[in-house]
Amino acid sequence: MKNTILSACLLFCMSAAPALAEWGFSEGPSPNAFVQSNNMTLELQCDRIRFAPAGYEDSEDIVKKQGLSIRFMKNGTTEVGSFQAGQGNASVQIVDNYPVEIVFQDSADYQFVLDQIAANAVLNLSMADQDVSYGIFELKGSDKAINSMRSACGSAPKMAKGAMEAPEGVVYCGGGQVQRQIEYLIRQDTDEQWNAIVTVNGETMRAMTAYSFFGNATPPPGFVVALLGEDQSEFLVFKDGDRNWLEYGDGQYSQCN
Image (cartoon, helix red, strand yellow):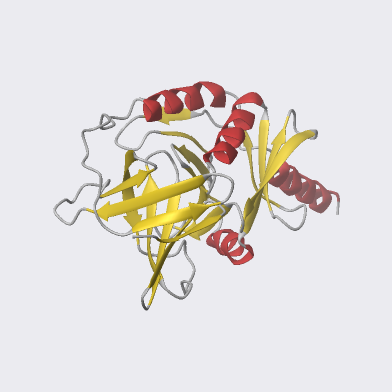
């Protein structure tokens, strides 16, 4: 009986303890800061998080709930802040058959998460609706890895202003307090990752295309393509009959040419 109690205690302590591993940085074509344990991996990329929990069923659960609680701890027990990622502020999907990928709609939200990871001691990734952890990571050394990643992401080659010709096609206008004019062009003659060009109020940037609607089995009616800008912005393009519109941030932009 005593051995059974001790074994149960040991199992609970192991599951509740942070994954003790060194943070690393990989430059490569997609700079990232990462930490690996025996059965979990957390990867921070320039514009998204990839988390491979201990079991595939956990990945399925996160996507089914469409949410993840990112909790920042100054030690193993004291929470100093959190961010609830899910519908309304991020896309949550399974990629490469296993990891959960979280892409933030607002780059400021992601920068907040990175700041907190770099500043604290423990990270707890848990269910959005209850206090059950998918994974706990020690953050020692994360600040150095994140700084390296940010530096590499910021130094990624970008086309100078004027180097890209503004796209010519459907123009979208609208917005709330800030009015914008948005236009895009998908380059059919390239196999590069950045295969699209987006212009917002005369400022042109590169973007990549995504034709799946962030892991949802059925995209919304009229969905055509998602454009993921190099500044971490996202533009969702829709078409229904003769109506063309684009969603960016919290605003909807209708065809205006």
